[in-house]
Structures are given as structure tokens and as C-alpha cells.
Image (cartoon, rainbow, N blue to C red; front, side, top):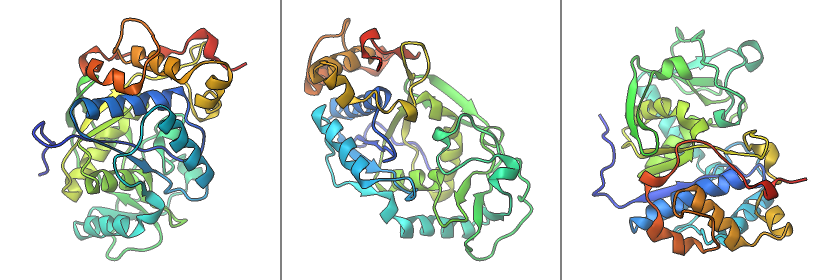
Length: 311
């Protein structure tokens, strides 16, 4: 059975945005936390473009996101990896699961069962698949919707931010969709295969993705990839307390700059929100590296400054 990465291994972190909208403040905070964590360890930080959903992804948005990150001083230490170019690797992953008898075709429709789409973090909430087609067997890969037959039992892990966590993935997500009828490979398969391929040792993301962690660990075990460390950050909320999401993409770096807020001020607030300083003060990303400690990162949600809200 695969084992977690250890502290003796070189740290490799990643930020993996979907190119479907502008990066908002919460996305930038996650990217900075991931970058600071690996830089404090002398490790490697990489950017992966999660454009597996080609119908919604836009190259212009990729360029915009990379420019925003670069303005903050966050640039990839290696070549970009585009999921849209990784179809052969995902098919190989499906072949391995098929050989183990862990794949089955699913005839259910999303309309019928309100199932998960390819990226569960874009849904309003998780709805576990009830296992309607679990009785089916599969001998060869086909263009149908394909699901991973989850092993029974709970998964435990030590979250860098939240501490000890334990979930039953069957109760949270049910058997996850790995391949869609339209030919797209789904989120769970792509992220697990790519984290393994790139040697990612730590995954930093928002707490809204914590419920899918156990499901992804089960996939890592089935595909014999080591388990990275997970750190789930509290979410960034708007002034009214609502969680920032894709619809809030306009509350991004360029909008804040247009409101007269300097990049160094934005970095200062982001660093403060991650526990690097006692109060927000202008700085560069490099200046935050020696100040970053996971033990000081707040576990709860955090609100943006009142003056940042778009009007």
C-alpha cells in the first residue's frame, strides 16, 4: 500500500487553477500559501493548468492568471503542465483500474440523480453517488461514463491546517466519476494522476475541497501513488460574509490595482491573513518566506478589507 511522502523528500508544491475565470483574492491567497510553504523548505513550486474541461477553458484566461501570479512574484519553477494534453496518461490510469476490477460503466444521467460534474469544487455542495450501477462489470474500456468502485472503510490523514481528519469517502462522494460520456476525463482522475506524475509532496487548497480528500486518497492507493500532505485553508469571504467564488473573479488583482491598491499592499494583507505578520504592511513575496509557519495560519475563514469590495 502506498505511504505518505516524508519530510526527507524534496518539497514539491503546486497551484492548479482552472482557466475558466479570473483569479480572485481567495485563489491568490491559496497560491501564496503553497508558494511560501515550499520556498520555506527550499523546495520546488509548479503551476499546473487544469483545463481538462476544454469546453469551458480559455487560453486567454491562462495568460491572465499567469500574469497575475507573476506580478505577485509567484512563478513556476518548471514547465507548465496542461491537463488537456494528458489524455494518454489518464487513459493509462483507467487501464490500471480496469485491470484491478475497480471500474464500471454508469448509465445514470446527471439530470436523473443530480450527480457530480467533473470538478466538484465548482458545485454548491457534494451529493454522493448512490451506487445505482455498481453491479455492472467492465472488461474493456469504453466511451461510456466510468466510475471508480471505492473500497469500503474510512480514510484518516493529518491535515497540516486542520489536524487529524477522518472520512468515509463512500458517504461523502460515493463512487467518483472518472470519465464522462462526452470524452472528458474527470477531476478526480486527472488531479491524482498529475500529482503523482509531478511528484507533488504537498497539496494546499481551500477547505471547500476537504470532503474530496478521502476519495482522492483511495485513488492514490489504487494507482500506487504516494500520498501528499494536505493543507486545507479557511476560505476568503466578501465584506458581507459570502464566500468568494467564480462569480467573484472580478475581485482580482487588476481590479484591486485599479482601485489604487498597490501589489505590495495586497501581498501585505495576504501575508497577514496567513499569520506571517501581526498587521498588514506592504512587502514582497520573498520577504514573507522566512516569516511563514503553518502553525500560525488561521484555521477559520477570513474577510477581505472593507475597501476592497467591488462596487
